[in-house]
Image 1 (cartoon, rainbow, N blue to C red):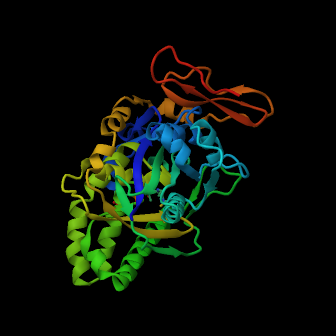
Image 2: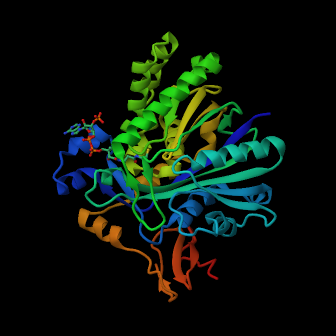
Image 3: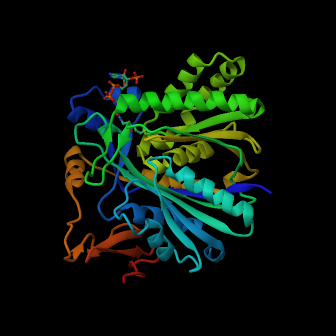
Length: 405
Ligand code: COA
């Protein structure tokens, strides 16, 4: 029996910034952003599209009534948490109407957390093949205005349903993880923006990738020989390519030398979505997987794919997946691409204004958004430090409020 990703979808908020405009405002050469860093746009979340709303919008189209009864766990990975105690997963369990005898938990270890959730989900289903797990990754990445990390921001969520005999990607129980206590990127609780040593983080990411691939080669050469594509956690699209080149430079094994050429050839397709969305932290690796599922023309059933998950701090893991027959039929490619195309471009001034907005931290009621213009879930208000969400029914109009407590 195989276990893995049965359904997958992503959600991005309705605004974006063209990075050429940002380059102009920051007096940088646009080629630095679009070629040097490899990003074209970054998604920007208004206050009402917080991590809960984005995750709910990513998951909502995936779930049929039966799934809600079969899901035993809701696992939410994020590094944009707004509560130290109550898990974001609990809101999702409610908003999506999951059966009550379920677990709902939040996962944290920077951008790696989604992979920890996926692994837990797969292990759970291996023991109980008739049950399912919903995994959510949702983040808004923030660096300082005019900082070097500013161009590598983004916002969005990826949701997936894990089941036995999955329709999209079977995940092998064989994987290799690595942990090392480092300060490359971290966010103490009193800060809204992360602290990052970008150059060190880049170096660490590459070193750990090279180390994991070397170790995996020692353990299971055959699997490395079969790998058709490698997907990376992508804070920006150049990062995975640098890691592949570092592997080629530092590992002289003839198999690695031969395979890196193939992996580099298939690399651009893994980045198409990320180039338009930016860094979504926990979901970035899985957005890269979706990008490949949409754009790799050479993919065939039973192809073996690798996923390199990296979370600053640092924890990393190399996962192996096997593509399933007919996987395209289980992806709503049109809707996924439509939402990207229908986004509204912001000016740099509008982006800076949104960047400065925040929800007041008082007892008083604060209406975040009286009525959203978009279909889907949104944060309506915060009252007594409690967040309340509304669902804008997709069809028919006028919008129908189905959930306000
Ligand atoms: N045309 C083309 N390329 C250009 C260019 C131009 N006009 N100007 C610069 N570049 C290239 C540089 O050569 C460099 O390429 P390289 O990385 O292959 O050497 C790249 O653009 C970036 O330039 P650099 O000067 O290093 O940029 P920076 O000091 O502004 O920092 C990051 C870039 C990515 C390090 C910074 O944005 C960052 O720290 N981001 C956060 C990373 C992160 O999220 N880490 C933690 C999670 S893993």
